[in-house]
Image (cartoon, rainbow, N blue to C red; front, side):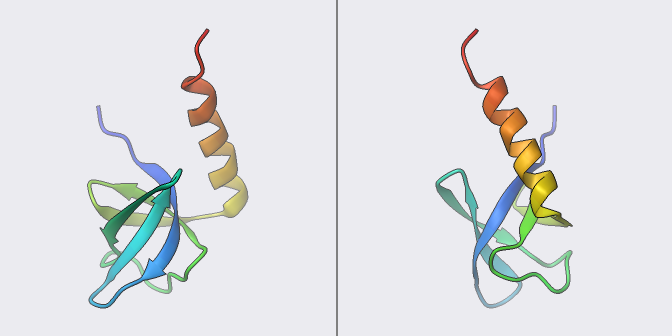
Length: 73
C-alpha cells in the first residue's frame, strides 16, 4: 500500500529541496516536481517528493481524518 500525506513546508533549501513538518516530525523532501512553493504551503508528500500543492482547508480535513484513524476504539 502506498500512502501520500499532507505536510506543511517549514523551510525552503537550495537545489529544489525543502524541509516539511509532518505533525512535528521534520523531513527533507524534493520540490523538483512542483513550481512556486512557499513556506507555509501544504504539499502532498510521497517517498521523499512533494507531488502537489494542497489547499490548507483540505490539508486540515485530511490530517484530521488521519488523527481520527489513529485513535484507539
